[in-house]
Length: 374
Image 1 (cartoon, rainbow, N blue to C red):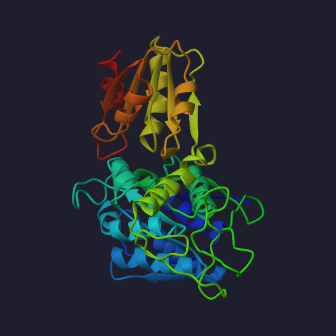
Image 2 (cartoon, rainbow, N blue to C red; image 1 turned 45 degrees about the vertical axis):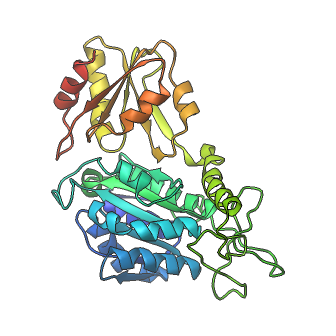
């Protein structure tokens, strides 16, 4: 390993290389562009390929094809570009294609403020495409965590044969902090499971973990990539039974691995009376806020999900002591995760404290938003 000083975008690019990225396709969009620029300089030296595509639609389809050719694949974009990837993301879900999409959030709707931050995309990554599915999504609060969760995103994609989204934002993207970079062999890297026999191979026949082994093109197997509801062979199967079994398995393979997929951190909750829930860059300010509140005599603690979807609702609920009777959700949007926290902490008073800001919210702004509920 080596220690360096890097931005969040650089950390994501370095982590992708460490995780085994071999194909990147993307279209420049603020504030994610440095990821592609960095990879264009460094990935070819690691045996990888970087392609600038004509748009985000081409980008998502290119990395789907690259993944089926056997390469670990990734793209990076921001909210407007992610919107264009909706249909391709659905194809990746249905065809069980492992890939990573980085969404560096910026203000919206529409083109919004390209150079400023937000956390308003969290429902976009949850429900971007149509149909029933769960796409794991991770959200870092530091440069080091941007690195670590990028590797986790690749590992989750390969382990569960699924697209995975890493949610950064303009603050994390351009924040510079110390970073520890690991070499391969110093950190766990998961590879997709391959079939062991060509006899009667079916590309969508799941194992005990509900994840089918994945043969790629050129390996001598009969492989079919099908976007329609299909049977284990990949043949179109428009029946109630096959459709129900397909969508149930696509969701259950994620849910049954919730202990692997979901991560969170808690701070100062052992003696807390009030819990603040926050995530991503905003949680940096909230962490400073709970320290300020304690100086004022308010015993505040913090819960920070590192995985946004799916949430491990049982773990979230059980991680908080019964003495906490008030939960305040602080996020840089109009109050999105608040809806889930209100449902999870159903026997407590749960309040939304949105801090809608184009910059990293200040301690003063967060304190004022929280104090109205104290």
